[in-house]
Structures are given as structure tokens and as C-alpha cells.
Image (tube, rainbow, N blue to C red; front, side, top):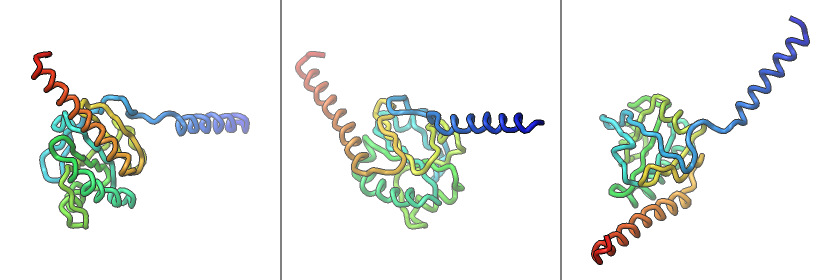
Length: 186
């Protein structure tokens, strides 16, 4: 192989690598329907998107070795899930990198973090479907199953504001529907 051929191969491979690195991420974007999932849960059984249909869902991707992930999990529990759940809202955490037994230890407070919301153990398919390549990553899915928020990291107030907006929109629709029905308009 000549020196010129070797150089051309490096340029070709380098160009391909750069185009892949800067291409749009695979997965979902805001406005897309949320990909369904059904995965093992830390308490046994499964957790699925379908079982929470009609609720606002905060879908949190994390790992035990991720410092920022461990900082946001207690905030999700106390400041979001306990305030807004479980009737119209739920949080679901998704973990691909830790054994289910480790997830269970976290869930039950044996490692300092007690959670009342589901912790799913993913084999990588949910991470791939949502295009998760960095942690932590959070999605908010509305009552119709549409992704309304997608961010790496955690901006608690932004998440709370959107949850309140989505929950309020259902309350307004229910009130409007109820008053229309009472007046015989529907």
C-alpha cells in the first residue's frame, strides 16, 4: 500500500468519524411520541410506560457511578414525586449500568437514597430508543404520551414548571368539559 493510499484512508475514516460525532443524535426529540418500554423493576415485576398512560411522567436515566445523577435522585423523590404523584404524575428512573440488586439497594434507602417511584433495569433498548448517550438525562412525557422535555442534567424548577403546566391543562380541560356537559352542550 502506498503512502498516498494510507493517507486517503485516514482522511476517509476521519471524515466519517467527524460526521458521525456531529450528526443528530438517534432517538427521540421533543414533540415525538414516547417509545414504549416494559422492563424489570427493582421491586420485582415490571415497569412499563403503558401502565402510567394518562399521567405526566418524568423519565430519568441514571447510573450509580454518576455523581450528578445521585444528586438529582433525592430531589426527584422529595421535591417532585412526593409533591405531584401518584394520581396524575409519576417519576420513573431507568438504569442500564448497574445490577438489579444494586438498583434495589438504592431504591430501599440502603445506600442513602430511598425512592417511592419505579426504578427500571434496562438492557440498553430503552436507552437506545430514547437516544441516551450522556447521564443524567431527563424526559417529561405528557398525558398523551408525547415528549415535552428532553435535557441532559437536571433543572428542577424548569421541570416543576412544565409538570404544573401539564397538570393544569388537564384540570382546565376537565373543568371546561364538565361545565359544557352540565349545560347540555355536549
